[in-house]
Amino acid sequence: MKIIAVGGGKGGTGKTVLAVNLAYGLAEKGRRVLLVDLDVDNPCTYTFLDIKLRMI
Image 1: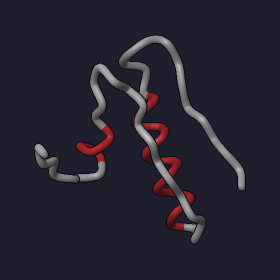
Image 2: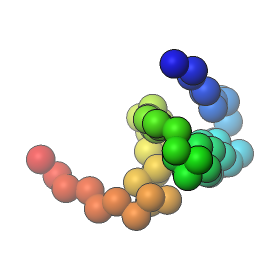
Image 3: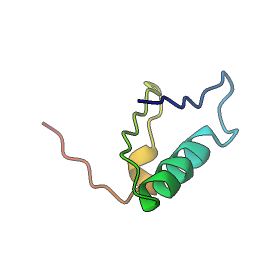
Image 4: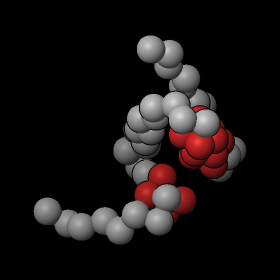
């Protein structure tokens, strides 16, 4: 198992865009991918993946 982490301290630098595109590209090549968004202040990975959120 290999782990690729994308991180940084400043917002708005494209970390989410890079992480989503990297995950998508690897999945397209048949790799198994788990994408985890650990941004507790403003998680927005779901918007790039067109996922609808439900409140539980």
